[in-house]
Length: 485
Image 1 (cartoon, rainbow, N blue to C red):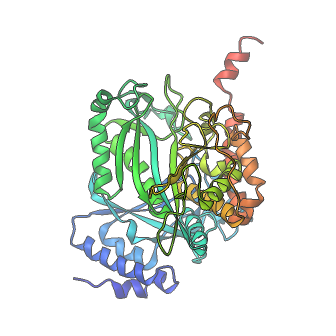
Image 2 (tube, helix red, strand yellow):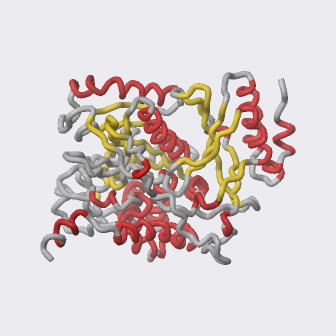
Image 3 (cartoon, rainbow, N blue to C red):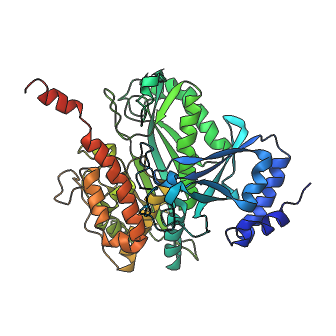
């Protein structure tokens, strides 16, 4: 059997310091494993700014070269909005990005062997995720995994670590018309036509679960085969709406898991003639909005103790209080990271089990932050209900760490919890993507925490989406004015 370690250690990535000794060892072990397996192809991927996996597929025998030299990909993949249009002037002398992305030049993809997964729905193939760098090896200031790793390191410098648990809502429909006609091949493509797999508004009803069980089982088995820590599969409120929950894990693992889960769900369903969507509020009759609830606990790095466990009933710990205060203080300017689409702001409505204002409550599902903390309970935690399921998990988790840490660093205290969240006289969440862009763009906090390059970059991409939305003539306008004037 070939020993791949010397080749990896002598390769350009290792020599440039882009692979640690542990990664070299893990890469060599992985290559030996693949050589004796039936793996035919490997999909070499990275998460883009929208939380979409992009990359190339290689034959398995070519994987050693990825560990020695990496893989090149066009830098424009980081410069696109959600229609896949490149919104930066890459053919000009100054494309507006520091580090060199003019002329659609390449970036470098550096594999992470810990992310390798065989695909249960495509057993001859596998995934491996990559970190991304400029061709020089320099860090890209908006590369999602690195943004999160930096935030995790900052929290570790305070002797703390974050543990997160996921509750993810989504919808699965039967495809009636996939819209493969030439006229539908627009940019973005025309929406496919679907119908429900089950009627809705029978929340957690056993007979509905039985009706949806074949799909639930396929998705659950794929999660388990990939090592995703699946905990429960639930019938959500709306028609054809699902919720999957996952056991707690560290933020980087769960960000990778979320990327794998969203992509797996779409690919498994597509093979069955189904369409899975994580869009927050589909424009479908009687459809419900989907949210993403993030459970968070802060632990002491040295002892592993949960710092959110209160000493007395009815109280919260100093760490929990400061963490909540930080999340609330920066909630509005964080929405570009937690709720990145135009559609997501249509979920912020009262009396819909979704937040519409910035506040926290004890075990209250109408509040933005829900406190679940009791003396002696090792699972004491808070749940942030603000995000939509399209959010880039690396950016989202980084925002939670940075905001919570900012509260801890300044010793902030959370306000009193609310009991009637939709009546509370507190600031509202942003009402549109444009408002969120303006708040993020003007945020001294995020400019200090993530840098001007990151803030200006993300605001520019989202403004391009807002501009296209704002300039499109809507059905409302047609109905309002076409006959009147």
